[in-house]
Image (cartoon, rainbow, N blue to C red; front, side):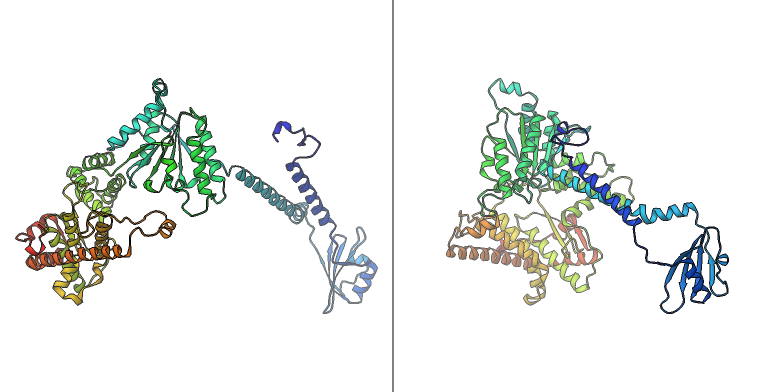
Amino acid sequence: MDKKSQLPGGKRPGGKPTGKNVGFIALIILIGLIIIASFNQPSSTKEISLSQAVQNANDGKYSKMVVDGQKLTITEKGKDSATLESRLEQGSTTQEAGIDPSKVDINAKAETSTFATLAGFGLTTILPVLLIGGLLFWMMRSAQGQGNQAMTFGKSKARLYGNEKDKVTFKSIAGQAEAKQDLEEVVEFLKFPKKFAALGAKIPKGVLLVGPPGTGKTMLARAVAGEAGVPFFSISGSEFVEMFVGVGASRVRDLFAKAKKNAPCIIFVDEIDAVGRRRGSGMGGGHDEREQTLNQILVEMDGFEQGQNVIVLAATNRADVLDPALLRPGRFDRRVGIDLPDRPDRFAVLKIHFEKKPLGKDVDLDSLAAKTAGSSGADLANIANESAIIAARNNHKLITQEDVTEAFERVAIGPERKGKVMNEQEKKLTAYHEAGHAIVGHVLPDSDVVHKVTIIPRGGTGGVTWFIPPEDKSYHSILEFKDVLARMLGGRIAEEVIFGPDRVTTGAGNDLQKASELARDMVAKQGMGSKLRDQVFHAEEGIMMERIMHEREYSDETAKLIDDEVKALITEAANRARAVINANKKQLEALKDVLLDKETVDAAQVLELFEGSHLPKEAALY
């Protein structure tokens, strides 16, 4: 009931007091009872007449008397002594009353001041009342706050943007020309809706931004709002889902209600796969909280209510797990792919991130863009930030090329762990291992270029042989994959050739795992097997329950064929790597010696050391 329906004095119609007044009255009654109880407390001291006190004192039964005005506090003698009280006549003393001072020790207590009396009364009576009253008041306020929180439990937690001074625009984001072009039409819809309505065009209900992590999906969504100059409601998909069924759906209704009041506007749902996963997966039944929330989103995006100038932008890197009802026309009408930036885009991104940082004249951002193939915008931003941190740590006034290179290597392959000490045998083994990777990768024709070789531990590895492709690639051939497999096994084979098959170590564990994964991917997912060519046996990568419940789509005989194909690829790669190492032992030893001496060898030194290396016939594929 609202405030207007209450009568003066805090009463509702009918004469009943409100909840707040009932609590206040109960508090007053409690305080009154405490005060009455404090004044009516029974005394634990026995009171006797003055004549009896005088007689007992003169008989030597008392050990001490304390005179406080007319009040006598008496302590008896003996093991079971007790405290007694008596009162002198007004204006008389103990001697005038007839008490012999030689029979009892008489002390006069100093008169208590009025302030001390009031302070004692306050500490013993008023202070407990105030403490209890404060505790009750705090409990009432806490209960009221919890009640308000319960009332807002189903409200949307979306944050509203749109009034910032530094708005994000498309000019603030480098690259992504195709994605910007698709989103510019959305901006036009929001700016000039009548222009499109005159031609019978309908504003798109939703735009789904799909791309790997760190490619700038959220920034693009904010740029759309900044360009259009409209309010921007931002929320994560996980913020809809709660423990109680129905709360997420309530928050969806509240969010769309707010958006309609602020139309035209944009709703941005980040990581929508947290709430938009495919229904009927067998987890949580058909009426769990997540599915109820998804149902409400579907209704709000394409229900009976039409003509609302609200666009829903959503971002995900798992579009394959989204419910088909979300992706149909009328809901997410557009799907904008946001890919990893290519070399020109990487250069533009690096220029933006280094724009406000003092750069030395030797810094070459174009060469850095060439080396960072496969990096996302977030990776490039991290490189720029790490460069500034390293320059500050080295007390440089400008960021140098050396700082940028160290930052790039730190982000790409991990920081150097110079504190990890290896003995001479481990260093020698690591040098042979990394030299094996390098010589195999250098000699094979379809492998990438060796960028750097080091035996300094980085991240979780004992050493690193770093290959960088000379240019961006969208497709890879069987020959390229086979060369990659051979160079992955080059470290293990080098250990085997130099120290013997029984002296190989666990240092190649990560190499072997990656090689097995690549070989299986070639056979099962890319159709690159020799016996199973052009056949794909894609394993289910969705929800775990789906993988458990769905049967394998191929027979046991086919599974054995896949295993045989994987084994054949690994065996062939090992044999090729062995042939290359045996044919180029001189170059292998040369790189090993330099690594033991300098620990790190760059691309130019590698080319010089590998001069005269060749590809043996046993390792050639064509």
